[in-house]
Length: 526
Ligand code: PFF
Image (tube, rainbow, N blue to C red; front, side, top):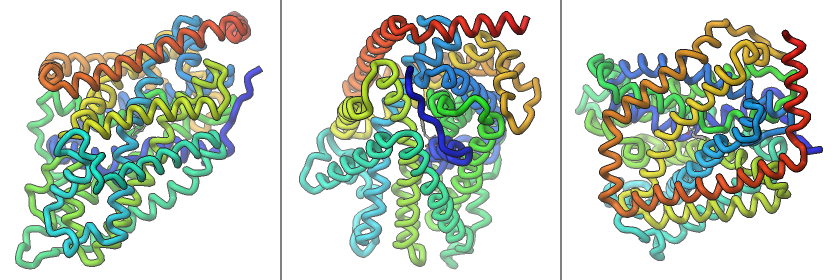
């Protein structure tokens, strides 16, 4: 019989899921999206997507994960097979392995930028007296945007060492397992992150009018730059796509992560309140902390134009310019980037666990073998991102196709599995097993009808309005083309492994009991 790991404590699993959710998406991606998509008006599609997609799907993932986990499966291929009661459904689970793995390959690079910047604050090299050039140039040089292979040059080579160190850290925690690794790290990391973020927030909120010669650049107008609504954007499909993607990315919903984490729960562990608590924590970090730091700070010091930069521009160019002018900027610069680093590492751990779980239960590997192989595959991918650094083409392409587009596909698969295959009556019963709160039945109806339709609507809008531009850019740029090929090759490889896993499961009779037990309980309920 397969030995199962379990979470140690209820707060531990909530912090682990919240740790996965709270990440760079909250502090960098969210403010950038709000500022670019109509300020406060963006919150309308954002909350609609949160209520109709994010939170319902989050409950569906928690429920399906625990359901299959108590039947001995922890990876998406196994979980989907249990839900569909056919071993063939495992192939659908391949996407839920591919997505976290590909995201890890570039997310870990950004994680290394954060730690790298934190170190540059410690040694002062990011302070204006030591850095006469612009922060834009610093960032471009640091990330090798000038040409492919730039990061292999001697003066940026230390960054590769840093990346290796971070790889090592991630794999140490993953190797130690769900309870001793992920849970114990998140229990310490989450409070530290919250304290650091609040410190930076207090600093920003007490700046008043930093430059008396520019009285307009004050805190109130800074908050206005972030939140003043422009309702016209609600009519453009792009806003709705952006809001839905942000909700998914930020909650870590639709990536196959929550189903994996929830599969380590025990049968009577609550999922209803835990799912809601983890999502609420994420929203607190996103709206209350992420939403109040970068844009107001950039506006107060640099004026309106600075708030229009994208995700990385805000985090790695505007913020350093702000710290350069702020009293005690060196300290706060360090705190900010170190906080981002911690936020990133609790997220990147969650991207590795689904694949480790699959290697172990699908291919019968021991932990050291599965961690070694996953380490090699992910290092190859991160190496690709690092080498093809020109204009961040590899990173952007992977982020777009996997981090933005593919989520809709997996989210749709999960909504259909929950609403139509498991069924909402059974789903509701499962969700309330051991639950500490009651969730209205309307949520089940939303999951069955509204969520898939909404997802489909947004996805079709994307195909009609945006897809052609992206496909055209693929044809023009060989690195973009190679990045997509890398994703497809990985997909093929994982598909093969999933195929093999199914044969093993069949041989071992792993499903016999699961499928027949189900029939009995279904008959009992008639
Ligand atoms: N939710 C994380 C963030 O907001 O940064 C990002 C993330 C984690 C995305 C895990 C995908 C994932 F599988």
